[in-house]
Every structure is written in C-alpha cells, then in structure tokens.
Amino acid sequence: MNSISNLTKTSVEKPQAVLEIWGRTSLKGKVQISGAKNSALVLMAGTIMCPGKCILRNVPNLVDIKRMGQILTSLGVKLKQDGDVLEIDAQEIIPAEAPYDVVSQLRASFFVIGPLLTRLGTARVPLPGGCAIGARPVDLHVRGLQSMGANVSIEDGVVHANLVGSKRRLQGASIYLDYPSVGATETILMAATLAEGITKIENAAQEPEIVDLANFCNQMGAKISGAGTNTITIQGVTELYPLDYNVIPDRIEAGTFLVAGAITHSEITLTSIIPEHLAPVIAKLKEIGCQVLVEDEIGKTFGGNIKSKCLRLIPGELHGTDIETLPYPGFPTDMQAQFTALLSISKGNSVISETVFENRLRHVAELQRMGTNIRVKGHHAIVQGVSFISGAPVMATDLRASAALVIAGLAAEGKTTVHGLHHLDRGYENLEDKLRSLGAKLERVIPAS
Ligand code: EPZ
Image (tube, rainbow, N blue to C red; front, side):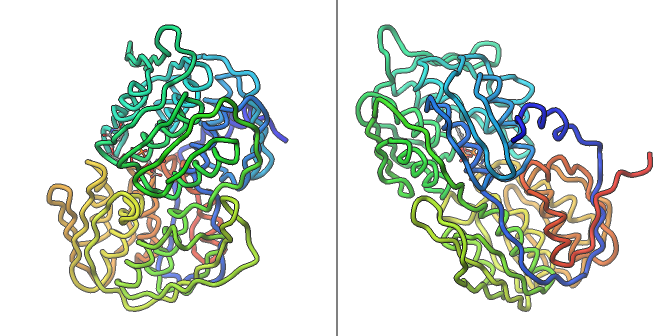
C-alpha cells in the first residue's frame, strides 16, 4: 500500500499537456465504468465520523480524490491506497484547519465540516470559493448546522463552527432546504448521525450519491431513512463503527461514454453500471434516436443489495430535442455539456436550459470554434444541428466542459487539441486509455515549447 501523502506530491502537479484527438473514428467494444467521484468524495469525508479503520472500494483514481486525501491527512487521518481500495484510519483526528490551497481547488473538501462538528464539537474549514460554473455558496449548509445548535461564524474566509455552551452534541432539528442542494443535504445528514434526537431534512436532494451516503452511514450504525426521497429522517446515535464499503459506479462517467458512442455512431457496451441512476440520460438518448439495452453481468453488488448491470448503446440517426437540467430525478446538470456537443450535430433544433448553475454554458464558445451553430440567450443554449464539425484547438473551462470537448473531438473532421486537461483529470479516470481501448485515436502530448 502506498501512503496517500507522497502520491499527492507527484501526481497532482502535471506539466501542461494537451490531448490531440483525430475524429470520425467509430468505437466498439466494452469499457468498465469506475466508482463515482461524487460519492467517493463525500464518503471519504464521512469516515471522519468513526474512530477506526474504514475500507472504501471502487474508489476512482482522480486528482480530486487525491486532494480529498490531502485534506484528511491534514486533519490527522491516516490513508493508504492500493489500487481502487482506500484504507482510512480516523482513530486520531485533530481539529486542524483544512489547508486553503487545497480547499480552494476542491469544493468537496467543505464536506468535512459536518463530520468534524458532529464528532469533535468543533470545525474550522476555509470557505470554498466559487468556481468556473458559479458562485456556489454554502449558506444552506451553514443554516442547517445552525438549526442543529452550532454556532457558525465566518472570519477571514474561514468557517468556524462550534457547539454552544455546555452542549456536547448537536441537537436534532427539522430543516427545510430552500433548494434541494446535494452538498447541503450531505452535510446535514452526516452532522445528524451523531446528534441528539431526530433530524428531518425536507426538500432534500434525491441524487444516488445521497442514497449511497445514507447506506454507508447506516452500515456504520447510523439510523437514516428516506434517502432518495425529498424527506430524510435521521435518528441520532452515540457511536459509529468502521466498515468496508463499495462505492457506487459513476453515473456521469457512464453517461459521458454513452454520448461518446452516440456521437460517433458506435455500438459500445459499458460494464459495472446501475441503470436506474441513468434513467433521465437513457430517456434523452432514446428521444435523440439511440437505443440503450440493459444486460445482466456477473458484476459487483452495491449499497448492500444492488447488482451491477451492463448497458449496450445501439446508435441511430440523431435528432434534436430539448433538455432542461434539474435536481435528480431530473436531467443531471453534469451531463448538460456533453449533450450540448451531441445535439450540435443532431438533425434539427434543440433548446438546452441550464437551471442548476448560473454559469455552466462556457463550453458553447469552444464548441463554436469547431463549427457548431449555438446561440446562448441567458441560461439557454439554442442549438441548430449542423451536418459536421471541424477539429480545432479548444480550451476546457471546467470538468464537464472538458469532457464535452473530447466528445466533440471524437466526432469532428480532422484534429482537435484540447487544452486545460487539469479539469479533465479531476473527474475522469484514465479517460484516454478507456477511449483508446474502444478504438478512438487520441494522445496526450506535451507541446514542444
Ligand atoms: C454536487 O455539487 C456535485 N459535486 C456537482 O458535481 C453537481 O453538479 C451538483 O451536486 C448538482 O448535482 C459533488 O458532489 C462533489 P448543489 P454541490 O449544492 O453539492 C446552490 C461535477 O461536475 N447552492 O446541489 O455543490 C448552488 O449554488 C460537479 O462532478 C446554494 O445556493 O451542488 C447551485 O446553484 C459539478 N447554497 C445549486 O444550489 C448552498 O448552500 C446546486 O448546488 C448550496 C448550494
């Protein structure tokens, strides 16, 4: 096992490589989907709640995971990584302040505030800044913790949270979220596991990653019900126990590969999937003209009883459709950029409305450089499908935008050079190896200076 700390020193700082993609190559074959980034990150934070050695399996090898490892290490947690298995020992934790330089690059590091507060009664976490896709405030997280009796103040960009007076534990409360925020739901859910009494979260987020977190906490000894609905109830307990847990597959990586298959008119198969997590994505792919078949596999079991399946994409003639991003079970905002690329070369017109984040259409300008016909009006992208797009040098602006540009490059005539790969490496494990194994022609190179 390698200790995570020296891994972080080498693998995060990468030279400014670029991805060269030669388009219009059809894909074929099978690709295994990795564990979900947006589940693994919050589960890593959740291990802080338990004084013992937890094992997380199916953890994707990503820069964001390494950064979360740095955050935990700074709090005294000991981590060991062996492939996709993380051993996390939070026996001894110190209420240190998570390092700003890491927090500013990984919003998910804010997830440690709930576990620290509920275990130690105190937490100091730098306020995560905004990022390319929006301001991304944490007011719903803070208000939830205050409802549970925490004194929360923000001084010099650091969120200080403490129990008030003689209280030794957070107090259960009824909390209504103004918006079904994924992160706020997760912060409150974790804080409530060791609180005194019952906490009820109304208008809660319903994403699969919330269900995975609830299953994880319940396996630790928590008493949580209703995860996956808009009302979650948590009965506080006094102790949590170490566990060995399998992270769910990454529905967004899976969706990204389905779109790569559709845009290159390729029949491909994805393995290690939970199809229900992709219902809105599969529905839209069918509307656009593809078929997506669910097949059994001898795979893994998740969340205690969910068996993994395969998904087979059968391509078809692509027709435009409208998309509006919404909280789960609506169409996921994390798939919006990839579908914008797909619809840009689908017959007819499409309107794509981004309702979750205020600045998540920045990939449009880059897609325009490739000959697409897309107009942005407010938070809508109005797409007129074109018959072909041309390769060009393009700049990734955020994680899912980078995936959209790779997808567009797979369909474009000629060569596309994607810059800003640090965005891609945050959220996709070995993307180019996986695409090459399906027959794509692409290579990561360091341009001659
Ligand atoms: C999670 O971010 C995901 N990240 C995001 O994935 C995903 O896009 C998002 O959920 C929505 O599904 C992780 O899980 C690490 P939110 P999160 O709180 O929790 C506003 C990716 O590409 N809001 O549901 O930050 C917020 O500004 C990433 O993998 C408040 O106003 O999302 C946004 O407009 C990107 N106040 C909306 O809610 C708050 O206190 C949704 O945010 C919290 C959120």
